[in-house]
Length: 434
Image (cartoon, rainbow, N blue to C red; front, side, top):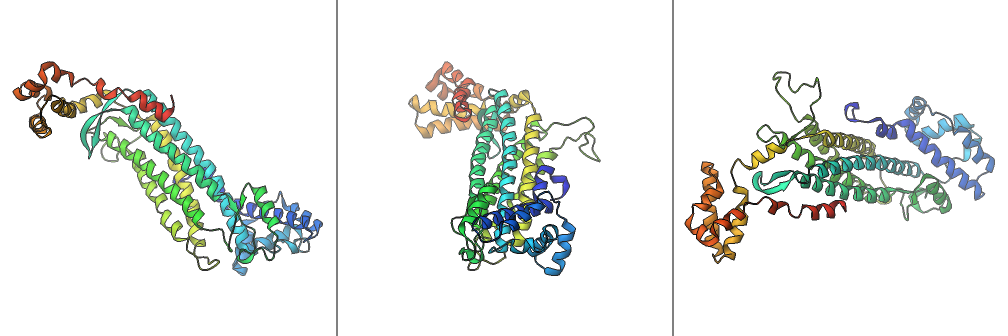
């Protein structure tokens, strides 16, 4: 990813130097296990650890690879330059390149998941704070973009919190799913290397041994991981879209924080644009873009081909770096966004009392009016509010049929706003447990 949408904590995971350090650890731990089994001399295994503080020369490895046309061989050649060719002659004993590549990739994805989980926690904290702050701040709920019934701003934040909390659970499972390693040799049969080597390496790297690999770790694990990132990205967009809607001039129920010196437009000085959440919508598309290729990587020829390799070299960094940036940006947007409670009430009252139509509709059949007649009685008054901006309650009080069925007090009672917020505490307890 370009630096504009990347944070150094996540980018560092995908640096070549980090990759080569993980490759080294895999090879060194494998040598320890091989020596313990008596497959290679202990002194050779010990010699490999002479490079434990070496900063591997990426340019030198690239230079070797230009000749070998093989990245793992290039690394092993460079490693031998540090530990000695005789000492390094038994490094990689019984292993295949994918043992190193796949185990390394999964280590990187596990580390990436840890950083992403930190980002999710930041979003959750911001959403919870704003939900509690605006627990009873009334706003109109909308379906199809049209006024429906009253809700609260706190409930809006709470539902996003619940969604992101589910995403945290999904990501934890995806991290567990991807946390396997394979040191099983060519086509995964362990013919040339003992399964104990795999167990040792995985334990040292914080992974589980892959129960059955071919020459690669099964790619359904990776498909699950990237699909989870795609779902999280969609949730980020879900929140961003709501904020973008709230910031529209005609709505203005909430807005991104606009800092001192910030400019909204090169042409129109008055503009305050929702640029951060628009950016989040775009970044979500980039993360989701990686999901289909990850799923297509599941189907490989026989015990392996490398059609997945070039894909993962791209989507591994791109998806995790982009999502990490998006999560941290979203946490900041939610934490600092401005809420306009009075505008929420003003918007709801643009069509006075109209959001109470269902209460009247429910009351009329209970008063003996048929459902069909009740709907007709309510709708004819509601349409006048739409068309003439009249007060819905006043229209009902002037409608003889409605008054005959409900009475004046019965009609007035249907316009109590507390009716719509009476279960907010229950919902909050379900979401936050408090």
